[in-house]
Each structure stands twice: as structure tokens, then as C-alpha cells.
Length: 421
Image 1 (cartoon, rainbow, N blue to C red):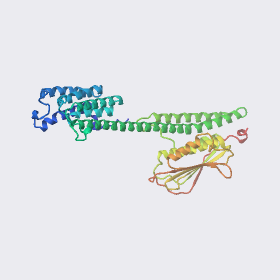
Image 2 (cartoon, rainbow, N blue to C red):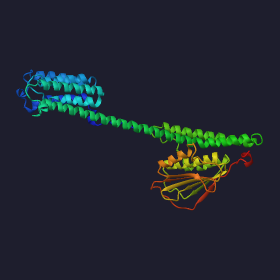
Image 3 (cartoon, rainbow, N blue to C red):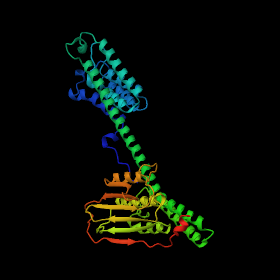
Image 4 (cartoon, helix red, strand yellow):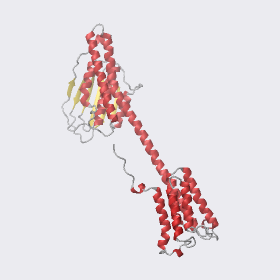
């Protein structure tokens, strides 16, 4: 099976590392910008210098380590570290927005990846800290309330809001992508079930129809013509074995996970003679006529299989409903880029055009998937016709030749007087 592709490089970095890096940038940038002069860094000397900064770093790293397991506690530790390292508890100093970079990073990651309850609690906690801090600042410096200017703490509150909104947007995008993926998977499962149902119907319905016809003939002649009854039972056995083999091939194909080429090849138009022989042996003579040549390249598997299934289902309907002893199958390659198949009979029975069966409806759907044309209906002079036109890709060369009629011989037909008994 194909391996799962690796995520992008940035997505491989754990959230704990991102928060830790954000703290290092927030704590180290002021010192680098001021050339290492701690006295120019507000609060740097007041709270104990670099030793105190190292202690705050340990607290911040502890908060970063808990960002996924205990998100709210992680935000608390990061806020404590940020407010302490900047001397934010002092009444006359505002916390610069850059000092809360680790807090904003954690808030964004928590909102994007953790449950909504944790996201809302973390956001409320950050905003409560900042509003409390703004209220404790002496002097008229609260810009968003006074309209004079935007202070540092005001900017920190705005950045926290932006971080929460970004995390929420990422979360919604991920949830939307997951919903689309789940819907696509569900639609794929439904389509696969429909395909399997069509294959099961097309594989089994024809053989069961033959078995039913042969069993009825055997029951009628078992007393007068036991040798014919024995032959009909042999045909029933052959049809049963063929159906089991087809089902086995289908199960092998369904279970195949790596595209093993050793599996049996699917059915196609090459099996028409075998299909015609089995149906003829059951009492309905099938005449196969081929017009034109298929060209140097083989038909695409889906077109080949669809054409065979159309003929198989149409012949099955003849056996079941047409009340006739013969039908004609025409396979036409003469039109460039198109394969045509047609099955006609002159019986008095009915097709499944408006009934509750799934045969013709499934064929119509199969042809529609291949962007072809499908027709099924009664003929003006009596009988029934099923026809389909399937597009063939351009690389398949098509040549025109003289129509060739191939008639499958009748091995042992059931006498008309016995079939109508």
C-alpha cells in the first residue's frame, strides 16, 4: 500500500517548541536591541537582572511543555513569566506587546488545536490579565478608552485578539477540510457499493436465468427424455461452477490492495462466444454479428467490461421475459472513436424499462459514467431492442471492413413442444 506522505517541515515542529522559541525571541530581543545594556530595559534591574530572567525562562518553558496537556495552566505560567520579566506588576509600567509573544503563540496554537472550551478559557484568561493590567496603570494612558493614543498594553490586548482570531480561522479551515474529506470518503464508499452491486447483479443474474430455464426444461422431460434431463442438469452444473468462479474472481479483485497483476483478467467482449454458447444450450439461440475491426490497441478495460455487461444483461432479459427462442447481438467498431453494441429479439415479452428491476437501470448508469448513449425499448414490429454507444479513446485505431456474421451453433436445443409444455 502507498505510504502516507510526510507533513510539511513546519508542521512537524511540536507546539511546545514554537512556544519556547517565541519566549526566547521575546526575552532576548530587547537585550540584543539595546546592546546588552540591562539598565535601558524597563524593569530589568528592578526585578533582579539576568538571574531573575533565567528563572522566568524556566517558568515559561514549563508553560510551553504543558501547552497541549494543560492549556489553561500553560497560559497562566506564560503570563506570569511575561509580566514578571517586564516588571509588569509595577503600577507605572505597561507591558510591551512583544513581551507577550509566547502568550500569543500559545493562545493561537491552543485555539487551533485544542477543544473550544480550552480555547475560550485561555482567551478569557489572557484578556482578563491585560484588562486588569491596563486598569492598574497610573495615568491616562489607556488609548482605546480615551482615544488619545494606543498604549503598549492596549496593543498587547489587540495582538492577543488577533492571535485568537487567527487560531480560530485555522481551526475552522481544518474542520471544513475534514468535513469535506469525510464527505468524499462517504461518497466513495457509496459509489463502490453501487459498483459492487452492479457487478454482482451482472455476474449472477445471467447464470441464474440459465439455471432456471434449464431446471424447468429438465423437470418437464425427466420422465419422457431422461437423457435430455441429464444434459440440462449438466448445463446447470456448468453454469453454477462458472458463477462461482466469477464471484471468486470478484472477491479476489476486491481484496487486492496492491494491484497484483496475478489476479484473473476481467471479462470482456472476448467472452461473447462463451456467453452465446451457454445461452444457446439453454434453449435461446444467440447470433453474434461483428462489424469492423477493433484496431491495433485493445479496448480500455472499463469500456470492454461495460460492453460485455450490456450484452449479458440484455440476453438475460431475453431469456427471462422475451418468450422467444433466438436473439441477435451486434458489435460494431466501424465508427471511429466509438463502440456500439445492440441486442434485439422478436419476442412477445417485455423489458425492464419501467419495472422494478435493476438490470437496465444499472446498464444505463454504467453507460452514463462512460459518457455514452443508451437506448432500450420495444420495436415497432414487435420485440425488444437494447443498444449502447460507448466512446473509445482516440489512440484506439478503428478500421472499416466487411460485416462478418458469426452464428454460434446450437449444441442441443430443447424441443419446442417440450419447452412449451
